[in-house]
Image 1 (spheres, helix red, strand yellow):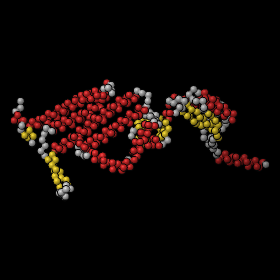
Image 2: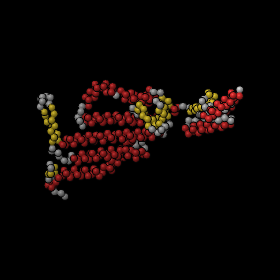
Image 3: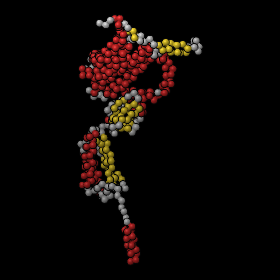
Length: 391
């Protein structure tokens, strides 16, 4: 047992006992913060057991361990530092309006500064824990939404997640102003009412995009996973946020379009179409007779309309005389929407069109040039002169 007189010895304004308490609390906090954080995470998960199931236990702990660990560490350091006295003071001068030009000094101890700093950080860690709980709730809701056929749930959950996290961040901001910086929050909010007009004008586009996001959820022109085309951008909807909508294009790039543009522009929801259109032209050589053109056009149209993967409204017609060949226009609709099956059907029809053209003793036209040499021109001229002499 240590002598009490020994523990009461004072060094730099604090007793040896205070230094031992400081070191002991700090040591225990650093050693057991990981274990305690996991234990608190599991205990906190029991509050959400009815909302979730046991399979989400690991996800909850993984989300909460780090912020709870930071909270325990900050609390431990704060408790250990509070075992020591901080006799030093810092004088802060400020202008006193009542006195005039005189300045008053307010003594502020190091302990007060430490209290404010740790209060600031502990409040941040608490709101960090709340944000992680929101992440977990959205994780569970997204899992449940994936089990349903309704894609609107997949789109609504991320939006609500961002909404509640934004609200929590605003509450945390005003909490810090009130408790740490001792700002009168009610007076501040009242003052914001006067400057609210200026803020609203400055954030006009952001407010329009926010209103656009609510319009998207109410009107539902598309849901997450739909293939859309807007402002020349074609891709799959991945996320609808407060300000913008993210689209994964066919080139696997990410396009971000403001929500206002999604509702104000012309938007095509390609996922809602009931067929895919194919339209193209082919060129037949000018050696093809009119009768052969009629047969080729008739056989192409008959084959397309008789195909199981197409609708019965396909057309093939002789369109015009091109620079290099006779232009035949082909139009039809494929009722299979899956991309891979659509490509197979289109390839099958294209190959059959090639066979039809070849069977009818024709060919595909392509740009050609006819070159006449100077020698050929001179020979032609000599022939003409010879004919004139004989005459």
